[in-house]
Image 1 (cartoon, rainbow, N blue to C red):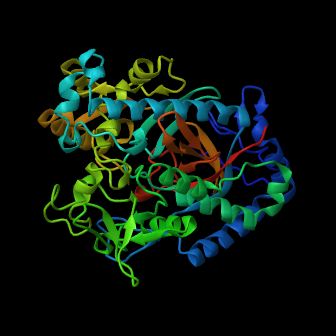
Image 2 (cartoon, rainbow, N blue to C red; image 1 turned 60 degrees about the horizontal axis):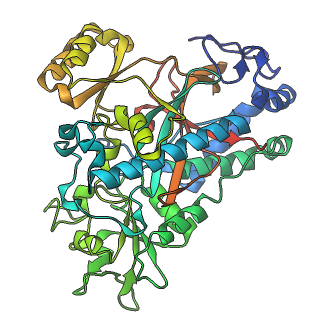
Length: 486
């Protein structure tokens, strides 16, 4: 894709091929009209100048991330694009309803498979797919968390292919990251473009930490009279440490590591303080299950707290998110989420899945190997854009090598068609250019029937021309996401 414009007349010279979110079938999309008018008066030069200021602001605010495998201590700024991605109120209303529906179904599924397993008994999902899944955690069988919530915080990745077609690409139910960038992107945009926010009623996102804290405290054990929540981080070398410290500060709760906590003889969790031990009721944990408790999971873990699993199972502390959620967002389980919606809620899914081939099935595997150059193939447990193949962009040697990996372990992969993802205008050195985007809204569940979604999201953008990989670790950037008022 090489469509660019250097014109100063707003979006008038911007006419990309394929579906771009600034346009509909009859011209400029309604959501972008006010922005187009503003840009017509200001010019692209204004965007370029203020984008340089944005870079300075991000550095001052310390908004960075680390990439594993790089030199220890090397921090990067996530590239930021100053052109917002804008959603109408009607578009958001539909997305919000679909996200809430999906999260409710996934929470019900996780509760079910660790207790009565009704969906497996009904034959809706193959039993072996769940019970033999490496993400299934037998240690929490029969356990129901306080308040019946397992998915307190989730990030649902969504892509768009037309004005009316949104697809869920992935569910993140373990330790979803990126919400701090959603908030800081908005903060920077409001500093740089205050006049823009006067032109349209953009719904706020700055109340997310307040909603998150409410969600955490609502999940506290029933015995907690004045519940205390903390955020458990792996430490300063974690790639998302900025987010951990940011959220803890915004919520007004303590940021702790495993060494700051201990489990007492009463199987309750305590935090070490200069005034002595203080009881902890809720732990917003930002480390994986296997590192939580060396007594139960990885014996060599120095990141968690010995006895934490025992305290959680006795409902003396709530872990958010719950242990064992990985089987709910495993990519091999993803194709069954629409059936979960119908099975648990008795409703038709509002948001569709991307059509998916499960390579554990012989027919699907055969088809994928024969059409590898047309498909996107992902590891079932992969994340961050790693361990995947984008067939249309791969060389012959890459296709052949990946085919051998699939043959060696077919059940480790799924495949999906290469969707014609929507684009949004993105500032490049040569002017405005279309770049592919996805969307990660964040949902908070305080009860099995109560899900809150702040009206905004993390928009990730593939900054390389023609690229479909939006992950920051793979060279992607971010945009502020505007949801317009009614």
